[in-house]
Length: 421
Image 1 (cartoon, rainbow, N blue to C red):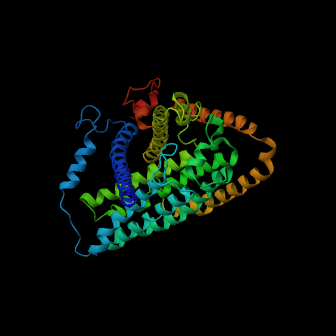
Image 2: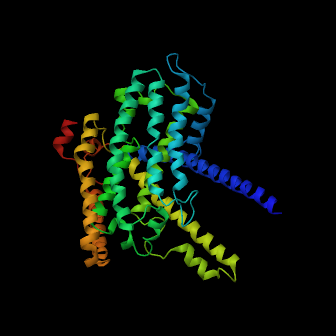
Image 3: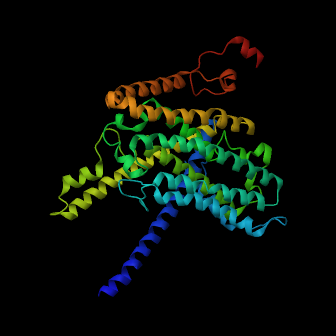
């Protein structure tokens, strides 16, 4: 019997590992499908149009599915001047780098495929391997445009990962751990417990990290590796069909991963900000772990499901901000992108790391958590004021001058402008 148990246990572990991998692959692929549809709707809204409306009803839900079917039936083409092996390996290596990061990403309290005490270090390390796939794709395509795009991406990712990692160390110093599950649980309770409101250095570290993460994901205005106006399509110029889709699954997967890291480190993780930790609270309310294990487990599962929904919604909001920035700001030049990193973001991140170290040693023992209450109110008031200014500022688009749209009441058009039109 012991021999049979010893034989079956690795089999069960292998089955669970395969199941977790399939669930994560499904989540990454499903998220990519949803994000592509969402980005089209966001772009349409910003550009005063509707976006997809024909396939899948009024909101075009099935447009991305239709595009996926089109990619599957496309012919698999390899350029004559390309290196066949490198050309094939490029998109798969890029996708593996983004996918592997999900193994250490906790979606709720204890819901993580591979719990690691150095989870944040593992995620940053494996996501950095995506650049190898992009370099192989650019070099193996046999195209100068693809090669230029790969070289740009290598320089950009290597540069921006340094200040991004330094900003990640700011909440790590506050928590004293690199375990993402532990860091998130430290932010349970009120919204003032979130590390973004811990002190001024963590608040600035969040915005600096998010800027660096946007650049590391090749999102506009930092999408120099895919600059259509300069490099045709960048490193994936020669790709089509299924292999082309792997690059976009890697991009959208990395967007959610870096957003999830920001949520776990700065924005309270799966905690709502006004309720206690739900999994342990509901489990203790429904039953005792020893006497009524079934009800205890049910409460824990329900609470963790709500936690996972909260975490995913928070991450989706940050992904939405990345889409918003892409369709709002113009693309920077390559020299501006590198100057922004090396002359501004890198020194700022070093100052933030030094500042939070001094804060934890010399200031926090005196002010304690009371400063977080005041700082939380100040930060929320600042964000509310900025949102109010954006919402109430009159648009300066040409449509507000020519009167081409009547969706908003902008007042009468000056006569001199009407004559010019």
